Image 1 (cartoon, rainbow, N blue to C red):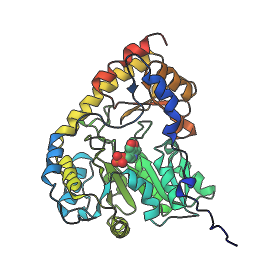
Image 2 (image 1 turned 135 degrees about the vertical axis):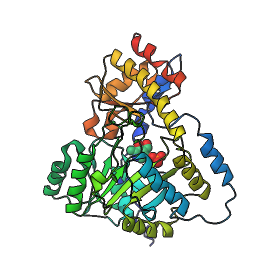
Image 3 (image 1 turned 90 degrees about the vertical axis):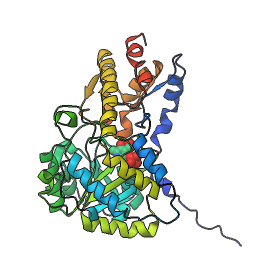
Image 4 (image 1 turned 90 degrees about the horizontal axis):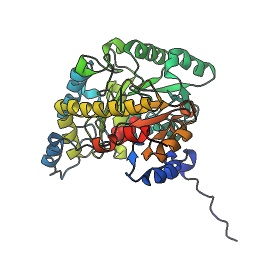
Amino acid sequence: MSTSPPARRGRGAALPDFPWDSLAGAKALAASHPGGIVDLSVGTPVDPTPAVVADALRAAADAPGYPLTWGTPALRETVAAWFARRRGAPGVDPDGVLPTVGSKELVAWLPFLLGLGPGDAVAHPAVAYPTYDVGARLAGATPVPVDPAGGAAALEEARRAGHRVRLLWLNSPSNPTGAVLEADELARLVAWAREHGAVVASDECYAELGWDERHDASRGGLVPSVLDPRVTGGEHTGLLAVYSTSKQSNLAGYRAAFAAGDVALVRELLEVRKHAGMIVPWPVQAALAAALADDAHVVAQRERYRARREVLRGALEGAGFRVDASRAGLYLWSTRGEGSRATVDLLARRGVLVAPGDFYGPAGAQHVRVALTATDERVAQVPERLAGPG
Ligand SMILES: Cc1ncc(COP(=O)(O)O)c(C=O)c1O
């Protein structure tokens, strides 16, 4: 008598449904607009990759040997210099830099790479990029949504509820809300994490896109990094800044990102990543270094987004929306004080597709996320569509 082998349960069973699938109806409706769809639902860059970066990729096309998982010393020094020049964070040790294959893979695998598992908690912002939750689940750890505005008190509450927080994800500027954590707020969160033995990973990939005076680099502002000395007290132990050039440099297709901070932690990650083949291709390492050494294209891209943001913000507010937070980053976190799916449908009827806030957690259920990542031609359609009859 043959017995059938036990059924295999795929990893995907532990993961939520892919939320974008639920937007198919709204997308079809928006696409049926006579003027075509204006897709503001995803944060994927649409402007050309800067020539300085594409040239560096081409120049490194001859790559017969394996690249260094740790990245070349030149790349790691370029990253350290970038933190000092652009992020107000001098003192990054090039040995504490690690290139990653885009930052999404690191977000998804960090809990696993750190050895977290059942019984460990991964705290992340309550309204957030969904991959923090996914990463905790892939490791078998528990995702714990925490309101970052609640500061250390919210983390303390999670601890008292029995969660052993081993990793704290921060995301400033936030996707989707555009909220920014100031240096004193970061410092308090870091102090709590250090006291309780949690690693802090701060996902900062929108940091060059600050809009208000306090955060706009073109007006002398700054979005603080977790590696800012006002936050660290000059000590990087237990801290990782996670950064990506996807947004600031129109490089999402290259998968060019990095983490930096605690040298011991980076060595620990490196040990596993070397075994697992998690290596950034050599031409991409060269392109990443070129992108980080050139500030001019980042400034030009920010100005493109600034102009689109002004058009979209005016159109939304003119149509009765309230835009919350949105002090930096690529999104307008907008509400009409109704359920987000109703707003998605209303905008889809006008040919504009946005993401419902519930993609980012139940606390987002009355907002929609409006991305700035469409061409000038598409963005210019929006004021008339929102002003016209529904
Ligand atoms: C907050 C946040 N982190 C990480 C990523 C991933 O970026 P990438 O994998 O392109 O580096 C994104 C992309 O949308 C994001 O919004």
